[in-house]
Length: 262
Ligand SMILES: C[S@@+](CC[C@H](N)C(=O)[O-])C[C@H]1O[C@@H](n2cnc3c(N)ncnc32)[C@H](O)[C@@H]1O
Image 1 (cartoon, rainbow, N blue to C red):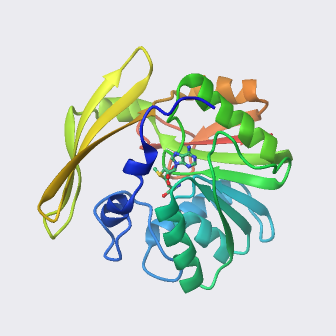
Image 2 (spheres, helix red, strand yellow; image 1 turned 180 degrees about the horizontal axis):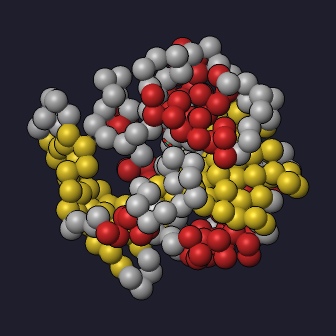
């Protein structure tokens, strides 16, 4: 297994849920929480995935890096047989609690995307949502694609939701308040782009309840042609990309949703 480039456990923790998945909606991204309550982000994502992956009730779906389960629970509510895998115990606990509260069944599994269980050919579809890819060195990142191909049945499909690099770079700022809550808590990020590695590195200061802590994380930015070639090398065919509205990818889309067939 490749070396960790940052400590995912310190990034995807209870503070992250506080800012991005709080019951009051939290501070920022569009993905959100519990089935059956006011979490429109998950429903919007599920609509898009449903359409782009031609999902049907009964299909076996792996939500790889499922986080706190917002999308996994939503897809289960729509009739898919969903497995959610994530490395964060805190997120999985929240995902299971939300599934119970929403009366949906999801098989939540603790694991590492670089070394999936013996699930060869088990899934009709794999979703990997909200920039949950690109955390390792390039060998490690490519290895994750190999793992996805391995667990998909022949003719299965993957949907991967990432930043659209073109738009991301055009709106780059050296720092940003990423999330701000009414109670004064906030996340302040300092950014660094490394063009030699294609990595976007972040030093995040978490201000919560009057205390601060700093953590670091990174993600790999991908232009579509590069990721398409990686997908093809991993064994995928028919690799395409769409924006957040499900239209073919354009420079002004915020998101790049890569669809690939195994
Ligand atoms: C940006 S979050 C996205 C979560 C979820 N897909 C969503 O849409 O809300 C990235 C997720 O990847 C998980 N993660 C990080 N490293 C991982 C690893 N090596 N294996 C499995 N999951 C990992 C984190 O715990 C976190 O839940």
